[in-house]
Length: 341
Image (tube, rainbow, N blue to C red; front, side, top):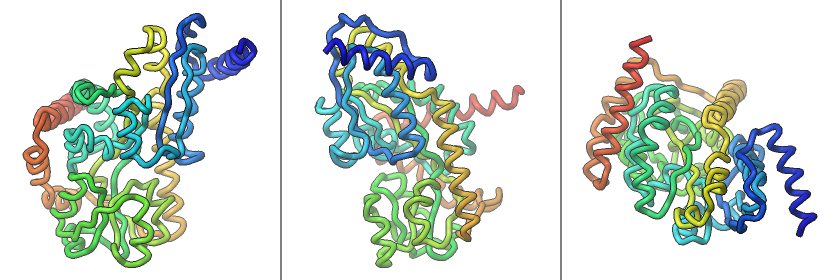
């Protein structure tokens, strides 16, 4: 046992000299055991972020976490089920998955709510964390940090450049209400499918396109859909979430280690955005038809989906209005900040 801890401490020290970890806990503290679950693509920015977390946690010999980051414990629904019941301690689910537990999160995916990545970052960091943490706490979860995914766009066989181009088209959206309402608003025949069913459905013609982030389209669907429209109508993110009861078992020093372990948001976001830019460049080189929306077209899309926000607030209920107002307040503060420069 002593030799194992020594080897681990040496590894952690080497890692922390590069990464900069939280202070090491007192090795006499009682061991805090945990399980981390996620579905993380190999050699991706998200794997790099989990590696960062692992190295920082390893700096504290009193924390022992087993990692299941390849979906070994099941899909996102199962992972969240396990997290809420204490069978998992930490998870990295998507915002769409989390909205099944905290429905008010759906409001953040309202179409054309955000205008830039800088605005997204400001609102999420300075407004949404504070308003969402109590909602998570009420479900027995601790919201630790947001995790970048990127803009949601539209892939299709045949161009969809204006909202009316989608009329009658069978397009896939996630089961999340914001995605479904967006597709209905542009007149599409909305088909709710899990991610694993998208490619077979494109191959068989069950759908002719759908919604997805740029990185997802590049790696999963670009060979089955000729066109990619950069609607940038919704911003997709995820979160690192802990089971609250498990976190309460930790000593103050252990909590300090855990809370500081994830990669800082600016660095984590930058790595995902670099991959997104790379994916777009590669698709252009391959001849994928990329459609950009100019200001006039963007206004057209926003007008076609303008009623979605009110429908989401009314149908979801709970603290939806408060979340929506927090986002609007954050947007106003961001705009004021820009005007003052």
